[in-house]
Image 1: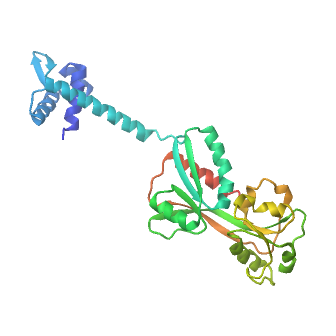
Image 2: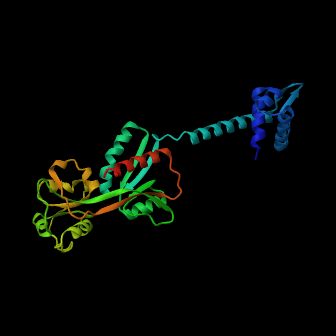
Image 3: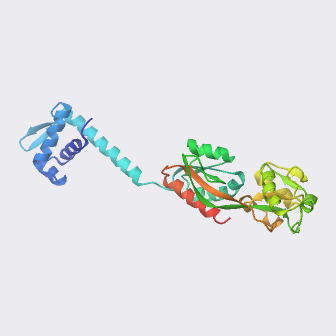
Length: 293
């Protein structure tokens, strides 16, 4: 492999055209410049310069080596530029989270992409098990989950809490019992039964368990879950993140219950992974949004 220092001296000499000027530019002695050239000639096994007094011309091998040296200089310059210029508005960032969290985050991500046209944000709503595995495998740059990571290849940061909310039709009185809720009927959804066990079980003595509550409807389209509640057709339970993204806030009521139930929120990534500026920008944005919940 060519010695990079000797090659750099050779290129500087060819561009300056003079040993003394080259020595001054490189903060070397003139014999030091000559020594680098001789060592480079010995390394390639051919003369590089045809000397004529104090001037010189390049041999065919010298011409070829000069082209190589200039190309390497260009590649090094490009590398230094790439390492020193990490644009937060350019490139792809992949994020995974729950469906309700996606409803909250995606409108803000759209705002960011509108102002930064070269920023690509890929948001995937997926179960938590897939978030963990996807971050480990590198399919996602980061993910939002409800408990601290325990896998050795992951690290996480606590970024807030997401409160479970009992959602009622606008103006409906806060129920004092599960019996009163059953008169409305439960709008079920994929996470709804687990949420009911947590929130209703903590607040109503007569809560019989999810098998016994009266169900009015079921919907697995996250964005449409509050719609039947807004029409007065029942009640449901959602994280505050899912309600915050709902367009018709004026048609629903969040019941004030005695016992608050919240899920911790963790922002996770692969352990010791150095994220580019664009990913750090999205991290900062996610934290700001979640801290307002």
